[in-house]
Amino acid sequence: MATSDTAVSLSNVRKTYRIGEPVHALDGVSLEVPQGSYTAIMGPSGSGKSTLMNLVGCLDTPTEGTVVVGGREVGALGDRERTRLRGTEVGFVFQTFNLMPRLNAVENVALPQLFQNVGRSERRERARALLERVGLADRADHQPNELSGGQRQRVALARALVNDPAIVLADEPSGNLDTDTEADILDLFDEFHGGGTTMLVVTHERHVAERADRIVHLLDGKIERIEDLEGSSESRAGSAAGRGTGREGRRNGGGDAE
Ligand SMILES: Nc1ncnc2c1ncn2[C@@H]1O[C@H](COP(=O)(O)OP(=O)(O)O)[C@@H](O)[C@H]1O
Ligand SMILES: [Mg+2]
Image 1 (spheres, rainbow, N blue to C red):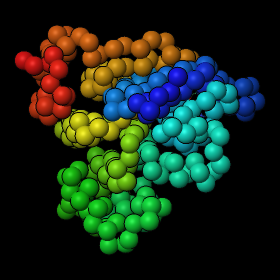
Image 2: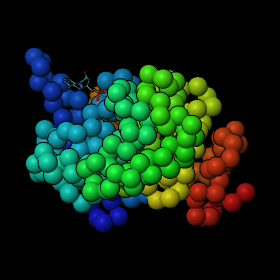
Image 3: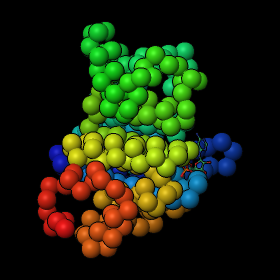
Image 4: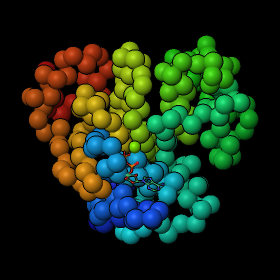
């Protein structure tokens, strides 16, 4: 059962697409995502990862079952309420970035605040601060087609974070990035997670998934297994060695000390 410590709760969720033969994109998924947790989602192409993210991101509603985000059942909301919930609770980094081609970087990042009752100059200021945070202060006036793939990804990330969402959803965020850019993005995820943001990240790369507390493995629209990464601090210490800095300090001490 969902509690106030639960950021997202899925109960017996089915999502069926009916275009000709029905496709059960999700086929009975139940999952609790605790507030402030970091969950990776893995699975082969077509296993339902993006469908799951779209439901959690309030972009869609389940065919059966319930999806509760920020204490509200997504399927029970009207379009406008769902949009509002998405705007306040969720930051979404899409696989394809979805930046507005005619807007420059700072305008793209500022956009989600339009629905938030934030004044124009404050919107700009906050957007610039986030661009700085992702290392793109000097590209604020560039349009997406004047940016590299990695830079676009960082603009998309800044946009996802501009409303200070409780939950960040990233669908294959490091898809086409070079190693350095990927490391930067993942470090930023660590940073936000350290600040209390709930992270949900789809990836097909093991080393990306291992940044999380646990990995949910999807197969044919079902949870095949959940791999807990937090308990095994010893096996993790080895894999952490190659990751560089940034991660060590983010947990609250615990038994993870060297
Ligand atoms: N809008 C849609 N209409 C019809 N079928 C869809 C739609 N979105 C996804 N599907 C189907 O649902 C299944 C799961 O898709 P998806 O969630 O995108 O998988 P993944 O992200 O894991 O690759 C696939 O078989 C896909 O073809
Ligand atoms: Mg996908």
